[in-house]
Image (cartoon, rainbow, N blue to C red):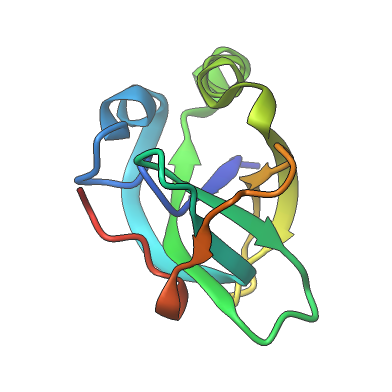
Length: 121
């Protein structure tokens, strides 16, 4: 079974950190969303909290992780995300089970992003 990752910020295609994720992926990214709230941290990257019952959604893409290098890829991404984020399992609006990085760094001290879509920097 292929591991999937939902990304919503700087790891998304076309954004600053896509080069960190791209080497670990296979196939084409697919647009999707996950119930939750997206925040602008004011630090050049977003933070998302996920909640099944949320009336809002976080927009992003789902990417497939190369099964042959999954463990190394996820470990590299965990290091990149650091202690402010935790890799969690989410279910997208499109009914895809995927990992995502949820903010655990306390109050994101930013404002919610209207529409839940991070603008490519």
